[in-house]
Image (tube, rainbow, N blue to C red; front, side):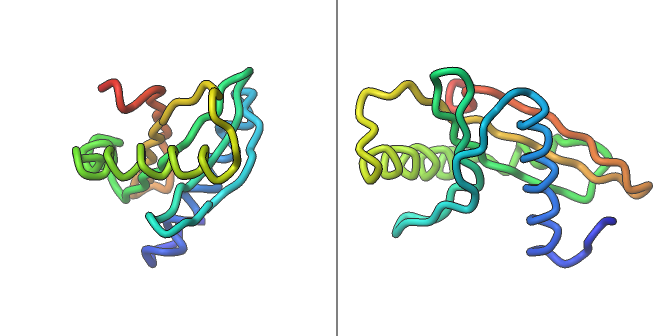
Length: 122
């Protein structure tokens, strides 16, 4: 299954990312969390760390363009969303980080998944 419309394709990528994270031992806390600043694709927990995950999906042969789309402005927005989530859920003092998962779905329909932990430290 390889959806072609943007929103269903984005949802497809998020579902792939959720399964990937669960296989890596992450506990999914919430998906598509929204506030006035925008939306965080996935909030998960790994060990004692709260992990905010941005998922970027592309119809490509590599994940390169997915990661290139995370510019300085997007990184700033992700940090603001993470801080808002922490504030709104009274989680001050929690250890947290922001990860990015790039997904490329090739013409053959194969999904390539790459995960960058602590993406703000790029």
